Length: 98
Length: 332
Image (cartoon, rainbow over all chains, first blue to last red; front, side, top):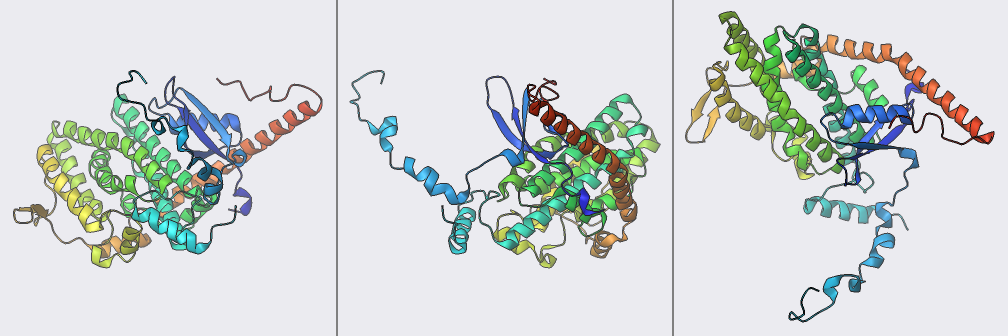
């Protein structure tokens, strides 16, 4: 039980496509020696009951994400652009199909 | 992109809890919340992993191929549940290798229920019915727990847990239509597992020091006694349908409360078993330790193989070959 056991296998994030036509969705993570093993483990761990038709695995180290601190810088600019939404425009009820 | 100050973080955290939203891994959270979450998720994960043992021992001795396949799938689910939970713990900065070490060194606990032996095949059925039934009672409210990754893991677990309970009950129904000896086995297993199942909900509310804080943080949604009562109320009619007697002479319907009254739980036994004095504590940990140690060479070999393959790919890329040709795309 030495420290070398720590982090011996890297962490992978797992994404599963539930059925054709849907996006891959993040379902969790697992540890594996390499990508191939990560795929096999993901199959065993996350698709025991037909939950998926396709799996992606990505090294967690390789995921770059925005943080809670970035929330304003990233997402506030879209907050005041109401003209990007269809409901911003008033059209008389008498006009059909719009 | 200035760092959120602690005061801001605290305000956002309080609002998140207040509005019943979920806390996500990278949000600011109080140290106590993080520690409580890691401890609870780790203990839950350990329980799933140790929980493979009592039933795992019966896989090769299950009486038919059908029962073997069912039990194998169930024990595989327990492993899966443990891994979903370790995955959730890792989002908080815990390391699953470290958590495993804490388990086998006795520094972290797991549910006391798994320290009882499985003496007959009827125990497999009773574990599904009572132990998984109690687990479902505990776990359904955790699907709304305030920490996002834990709540999501619990949703997945609860979906799978229902099969565990039903296969157990069906097994018992089958045995109850068998010989008098088989019916006696079911009654005997029920007698042994009933009280430990009631202990799964934890100490009584007036002796549960961490409960108030966990409720305030919406990690927990119902008190231990509340969930225990819910389990008793659900289970009594199931016992009647099965034709077994629950081993509690004080168990009776209370029309005024509209709940079943039940006898006093032996909390001294609970404390003894959770602190390592149960019939199987040493064996469970020894088995987990042995599995860890005997698996070490496999983990090392796989890591060495992966490093060698990565080295070969890097070498091939440097020599001008198409990178990633080997190994990466083969298993579609």
